[in-house]
Image 1 (cartoon, rainbow, N blue to C red):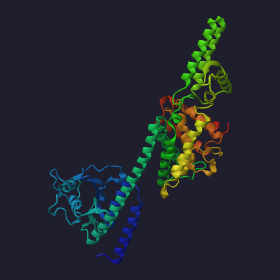
Image 2: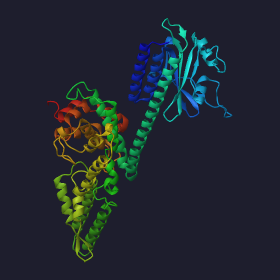
Image 3: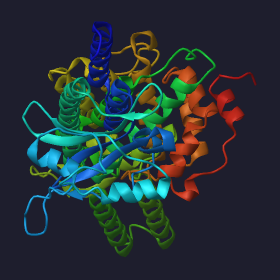
Image 4: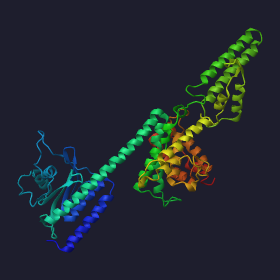
Length: 532
């Protein structure tokens, strides 16, 4: 019989175990905690925890201290024992094993001596003992029943040890304590499974949104997948860095999950962005590429020149020169239509000059039409990329939609920062970004991290309709200049380069031809982070 002090000590231990069970998030760790706590509570040498999986009991974790056996849980070694069927082939309950009986009947079995027990098949136990020089004697087998009255597993303890290390029976007090622990453990496991299922459902809904965006445009689906990966890579590197201004920055598992969700949702507003703008691969593209209409107008100009030549209004030399000019202008506009990183002012002037050509097209009122409309001139004169200012505003609007959608959701406490993290990746350190014009000091580290990831992914992406993916050195050069111009966070960019986060990302997502040699020192100097 236990003394009052011993009983109080055990109850305090049980209470501490309950608190630990409620705070553990990882299922594997939780299962290990349950078994080890039960062994310690009653001083058992060995134990096994089984979980119900379908119509079987699956070995989750096995411990035998005196033999040094540790399988499952944090060991990473999966128990090799096959699952125990709860019903036989003809549907008859499998009551030959004590754990099967505990699971099927929902009863505890306290067996003083397995070798003297009647009605249970301990042949496997006896083979184990013979092979390992062990003697399995006292057994305490407890079903794990949750708050919904479901048996979700079985906890089995073997060989209670006396102070002199001899084997003794599990007492009635031992049984009650372990039953109480098994009940708490079953509830903790069920709650954790439910939470995991809800989290999986939540992430599946997020992926559903990204799939819908992907279905609208294949050019954004990969972006929605890659930016969260790169964001987490840079955040992990920042958390582990033991130098620089982020030396004290560390992320918890909660922080990691919050940032992961923000990364997955950072472009959810694009679900409202028109496809013809997202997929615009050339400057003149709307529903179709209007460069074909421009080609037709050149054919009209060539026809008019031929007629003038036949009428004697153009001599052979002038006629040939005009055709050559038209051919050169046509090729120039076709090149210009493809877009790029920079368009020279003189090329923009040439576009307007070509637009002033006289041709025979007329409008509905019979008025002569310019060779290029003002809209076509504006489009062909785009300095960078393929979007006009109005179209860029449409694209930029997605971040307003993203913030509005995310801020409308009732986020739980551990995810309250998702809107801020996801909504800040288009801000700049100097306050010239959008949509809110935030400065570096007004932004979290996580939002600034996502800003770098978003830009680098866009530069290296090979699935954009308007450009091929850039090489590592080109992309880092552009990002370095943006760093110097206070577009991205300089301290985070330094970690991005020095910790070679870009290299690990490239090995995962870039084509071999894109992965060229990078001079980290030169990149940091270009960014203004090292002296020349």
